[in-house]
Structures are given as structure tokens and as C-alpha cells.
Length: 372
Image (cartoon, rainbow, N blue to C red; front, side, top):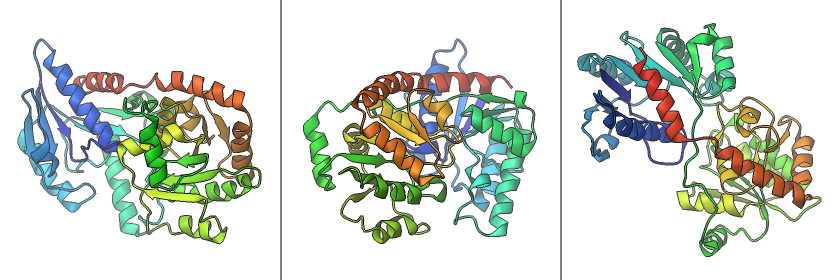
């Protein structure tokens, strides 16, 4: 069988779909090697990944030169796909060329753009293009993979397809997230970013559905009963100036730290050193950061919405209503004041995070790809 994989989002960084694609591709190459009759693998890349990718096993690389969400994706990428004549192509994201009609499988990570389009998709033609592409991709796929039961439910409700057409395959958690063995390195990171006290941590992108303004408002209440700091990682987004504006409005500039995009090691340091990891998101298809925090031995306080309770699991985190600022603050303080509860969450969280493996995700996905 000739199997193609869309690798245009391939990345070895710790973020999102790029990491998902990286883990999937590297594991499939290894699993394919062990088959009695290995499949022919065709990997579709953009640069610089096309030039940089190396494999000890025989694979074919195809240079696409078509960014995701572009017109070139619909035309140039489609032509590359047709030329290769694959028996099946796996798309790790919904952005499949509409004209592609041959067999393919598809992973849907979330429906954030359907539920929270935000400030980046305000034009009517952007919304129309998104709906046409994702609807076509889902309805014509041989198999649709959802990364959580909640995402599966959202797909069924929004696109009116039968539940049996969708298979749930959970993401994994990177092994790099673990208790930091060298406390001196952690201390260096804390000094670098001016973190001088116990702190709450948020890690992730800045988007409206991430609910950071309410987190900051809840933190103001937390400060009435504690001397905690708040650390918010991630690249500031010019579309969402209200995050930093809220900090200034409440006079919290000295106790809210914005480290920006931290390195992989630094993120592990921050997870390890944080007193509590807080995840106030309104919507997640999966939600990796709470599991990453659990692997690093940090108690988690998170939203009770979308997939978050499903992924964290009952009893492994404390959940709040993310729309109610007072509830966010109350649950943070409940964990902060109770050392026994912290220890329980740390122990249970570590066990929960161990349930999620990129090897298992890749194995299950590879089986689905071959079953067309």
C-alpha cells in the first residue's frame, strides 16, 4: 500500500498539531519498518522541514510549497497529491484540498474556529472558506479520528454525521515533561524571569477562548488572601491586548509575569516550580497543558468545560466554572490552603498523565489509516 501523510505542519516543538504530526510520522516510520511487507510512505512537506527531515528508513519526501489555509493549498497541494497516486492519505488537520477525491483519513483536533472564531476570522469569506473546507474534509473521509470524546460529540452535532464514522484516539504527553532533576537549573529560569515567590502558572496561546482576562480577575481576588505571583507564558497576541491591559487596569504589573515564548527546558522548569497550574480555557479539543503539569508533579485547577474534565479525569484535578471569576479564585485558594489536597492531586495526576502515550496514539492511528 502507498500511504501519504500531510506533513506541512510537522514540527519538533512542544506545540499543538506540529508535535502531533512529528510523533505520528516518526512512530509510523518505525512501525512500518517492522511489518513483514512494509508500505511505501510518501511525506508531503513544506520548507524548511522538507530540507531538514531525515529518516534512517526509506521514505519519499515531496516538496509542496503550499502553506496551510492558502489558495496554494487548494490547488498546488492538490496537484501534488494527485500526481503521487497514493492508496490513502492521512491529513493530521482539517485543511485538506477540497478537490481531492481519493481515499483519505483525517484527524480533527477541535472545533475552536466553529465555536470561538475570535478576532482573526472576522471576515465573512474567511468563515465561509473555513466551513467549506472542514465540512468537505469530514464528510468525505473514509475515517475521521477525534482526539477526545468531547470533540467527537462536537463533530456529530455540527456536521450531522453518524457517531460510528468517528473513532477516538487520544493524544500522548511528551516524555520531556517530568520532574526536573536539577533544581539549580530551575532556579536560573526563575531568576531570569524575575519570579521571586510562589506562583500560579498558565501555559498556552493567547486567544479569547483561553479566558485569560477572567484568570487575571480571579488572581486579583487570590491576592487578597495570598502572596502568590501569576506567570502567563506564550507570545503576546496583538489581537488580544486586553490581557496585558487588564493587568495594568488592576495594578498587578509587579506580580504578573509575562515570560513570552519560553524554551522547552524553561517550560519544564516552570511547570515543576509552580505551586498550582491553572487552566481557565472555555474550550479545548484535548488540552495537553494540564497533563504536562501533572507529569511535572504540579497540582492542577482547571475548567469544567469541553474535554478538560474528560482528559484530566475525575479526582485528578479540581474543576471550576470558567465563566465565574469568584469560582476560579475559590478553587485556586482551596488547593493553595490545603497541603494534603495538593499531595493527593500530585499523586493522582502523575498516574493519570501516564495513561497517555504517543506510541499508543500512533499505533491506533496507523491501524485506522491502513483500514480503508
